[in-house]
Length: 259
Image 1 (cartoon, rainbow, N blue to C red):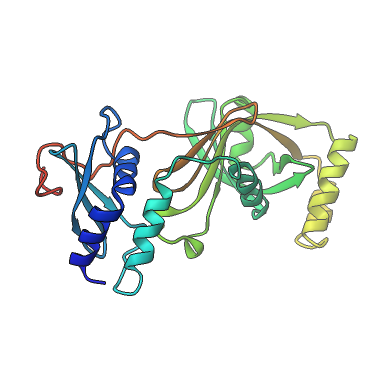
Image 2: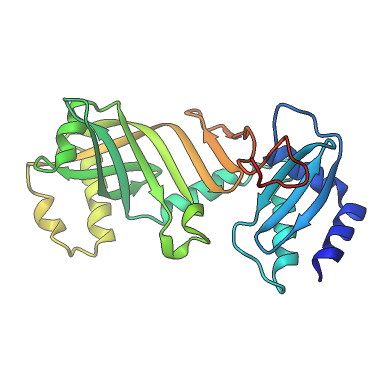
């Protein structure tokens, strides 16, 4: 399929899809009346809409002669009106892939602390089990309501380093009393997940280790270009609306890259 045939086909048969791309990635402050594909290459599409507004929409991955058709189809499908019905299940499945979690916290002096911890997931609840000697213990203790956590897709699994799937939450850290039923259940789960190895049986008995439940607040799930979702504390999921594509240029319909 040549670039010329792609231009002709899209403009003749897929005006709706081109308009949808402009609505999703273009200037959200204007109503899209019409759209025309004026350029295409293996990196993305150049579109002019409303006669004088230009937009560059790039593929998540560079295409080639064999994959460009599928890349365009995928881009157009992603621009359709959001259906969040399956996002909640996708979020839960994504969470379950992880045995550790990235943590951001604030110490007593107001300094940001980045860290990670093994993660315990029990009946939908999230826990970490950390030592008093760990740097983040002091910061989480000092500011338990000023903590964020992130699940971040491994680079080796991502389509691109800038498209790593990620899920983050603001959390409230709640310290769980040692020897409580909640403590025992969470540590039983961790010990089972680790197969009883890795020193878990030893540190389970150490009094300077503490179990913390992470109570989830506002969250955000990002799974690709234009695919970001806010997760409200009540569980409601809303797609995040963009304010435009950084490659768009309202002044030059003939050269979308010229500032």
